Image (cartoon, rainbow, N blue to C red; front, side, top):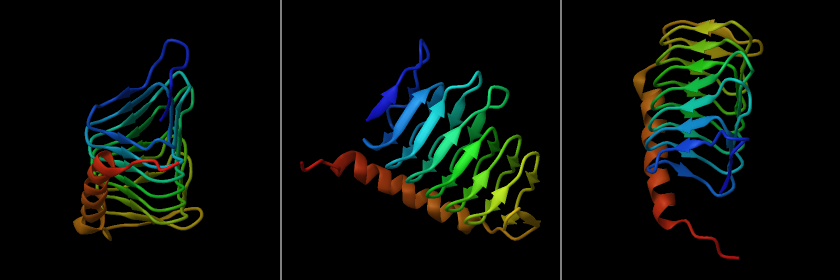
Length: 173
């Protein structure tokens, strides 16, 4: 696994989290219990502020999580961050789904039980309310569209998948 200190700052990774050997975690990063970081994901906590990933959250393949000097990136509990997502200087509350290829920028707040659609771009200073969807480029907010199962299914699936990988993944070369 590519886990790096940056100066005196070392990532803090719960012992029950799964970090794939081809993921990269650098510097001021905290990863909570039961969370999973998948291949080619990069969590780069190199600013004055850091990255926090809560419990039972999945950061999927190829996603990039970064910070600004002024704004941390916080991802709550039971979130699903899809493949090739870019999060930077934003807050993702608990129980949120961010679809594949989405970009979520500075000072954005994704409230609990919100959903960002695949390939959407949520621009600076946007708030996505609870139960709303953010879709398109730039994202338009569609209120009262999210049902629990849209988020809980993915969170459960990736938690179970991470347990299988922790137990059974082995390199063959």
